[in-house]
Image (cartoon, rainbow, N blue to C red; front, side, top):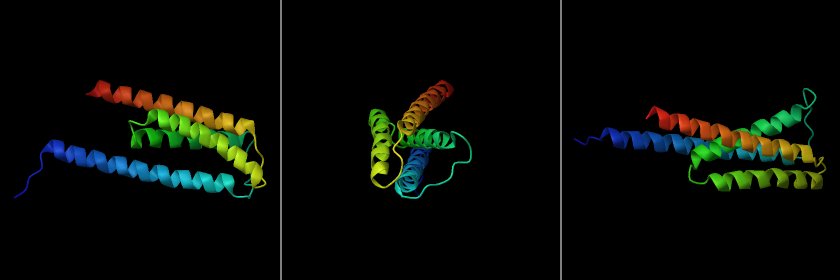
Length: 128
């Protein structure tokens, strides 16, 4: 009979969660690219609504990226910040509006995601 030690089970569970988070990151990234680069304008529900959408999308992307690939924090912060800028440039090519304020909202989403991930890691270390 083959028995796994509790540490082996914990590592397997942790790896399964990490893979799930990585898949969620990929799905969300594809959805964001589709919604931001298709030449279709989606109505905003309220004034500034699209800025909240930008901030939230990039905050969640950052959180998923940092928890999915914990040793690549700098890559995700820089990469997602550049992605936000790149989306704005490409939007001007596909007939959408390029707005600096959208990129700023993306940047603040990345920053908030970084802060939240840092706080979550610190809280996790304190519980151990």
